Image 1 (cartoon, rainbow, N blue to C red):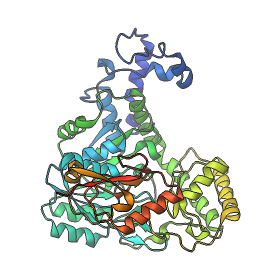
Image 2 (image 1 turned 30 degrees about the vertical axis):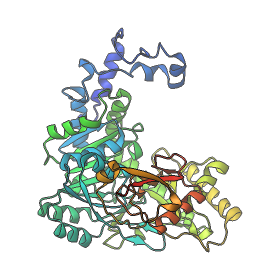
Image 3 (image 1 turned 135 degrees about the vertical axis):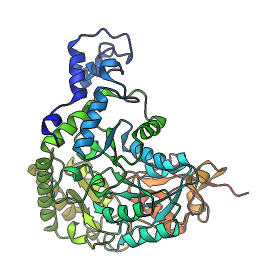
Length: 484
């Protein structure tokens, strides 16, 4: 990596030059550098509004970059060990969808774990590709889905040699990693592309002792959420490529769905954050790992909680573990993760990433400090003391293997009926049902609705999970494929 080159930030520099020019704007946006919306300017600041600008020659164009954006993308590719990098301003959702749309068209098969983010299944609806699901392993104590076992992926490849790609979570929301190098090797031997959803893996590119990054493992494409752990603004991400797929074609696919009005606030945040990680990333994530380790140690001293880590590694469905993740099992104190999540926010003014049926996840970054860790540990201790109860009767799993009977696109666009949830067992789902976060569908279009799934949804709703995905915002009815 060229440290001197990485010290540059081409988009930031271009915006600074633009600001110094004192340009009179007769283009969009209509707030005209904040002068047309004083309330917004007072809230966000004049400096922010002065660079919320439209594409122009000095600032390049995200849809067809030829100057400063192209330079910034090249520096990001170098920093992340990729052949090409594409700046994404529609979130990692757009990056995941662009990955799949770049390698799959209607009718093509793609091998993937079922515990993917909804963005991956949305891409199947958009493209018409057909999923071949590899059901993840499950940790029975924690009730969480794990990674894909290498032999399960090999079996899927042998059974579906015409599949175009394999998609891998690297890592899962909980921090679990599959054998990405092994999967990449057998997929490439079969002529298949490898796509990595690295929404929660930005730090892998700059960490010592962390799991392998997708580009280092040889994956073809990786969707990287810079805003999650890389320090950029929400909704800004990277799509990385190892060069096997023509970059011009990837750009065309990205432009099918990404805005033509790319935000320079988001673009500059990507540029600045890349520079920061390239110059200081290893030190940053060493500190993050140390804070997470300290937090786990303190939480595990509290009886009833279990902050899990590398001890889960089995060389198979848990090939590696992201030690920056602070995932904590709560069911042994008789509280669902979502209940602890709500108590932390409502009673202690602590906002964590998510809570599900049995676990919580706290994201730790360089912006945290030991005092904040101590406050979290203290709050968890008090929650246990005040609210712990007998865990008997609690649901003990986060994931139910689905039965897929129809391609997602076909089910989503099929003629459908809206029926009450309690009457939908035995029907084929025509929409999504998920808790958000994490946004992993409980049901997706084309899957059987079973009594077990309905019981899970009712339990999640009772415990306070935020359920989304259905056309009915009250979650009382669900769309199912109409019967002829």
